[in-house]
Image: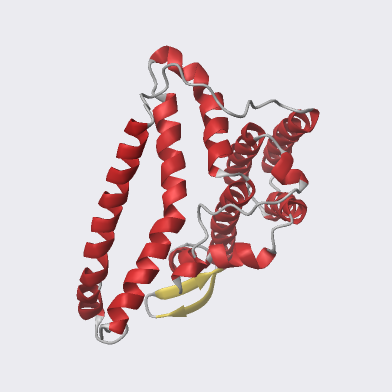
Length: 268
């Protein structure tokens, strides 16, 4: 897997309907959608939330291959989870060999678990692909603003999330440059056993850590030079305002979760 396949934290500018939604409504949709995924019970409910996700991907105008590329880093986790659910779920045995048994319940559970993980990742990618880090930070800060009354550091948390999302593509690019430089010096990262491959990562990790700390220090100095002192007395350049379409989206979120709960009660 190439580092360029990691698209987490990237923003794809556009003018689709999903891009024009207020970031607060998109964050709430993501939260409601994740809740709906965990409330799913059987084929009909999973099919319903999958159809919702496909519709939103279509109206985002982000190419499906971008989502497929973004899910490549978790392929191993998905396969490992599927194997655990496949061989270690009791029920009607369909095939067995020694200690390994595949049951009918295991097949269904493995399929649902894989689908759940992929939908969770995809809906999160949909949020970051269609919302810039600045708007995402502003939206999260506005949603968590009531927690300020209890002393919760809302602005600081939002700022840290924004910086983290902003530096993910930068660190990936920096890692790619370090790997290319080390390979030009004769480094070999592909041959050898697992321990040798792990040792070969040291020439990558050390320069990457040094570069990361240097960037963090430069950012801290730049913020201090601009008289940044936290949330006190700060205003936003762009004032967020909920449009009617945003309230429609929030209403749809409530209906979606209610529909999934109804399907769960019906055993669907």
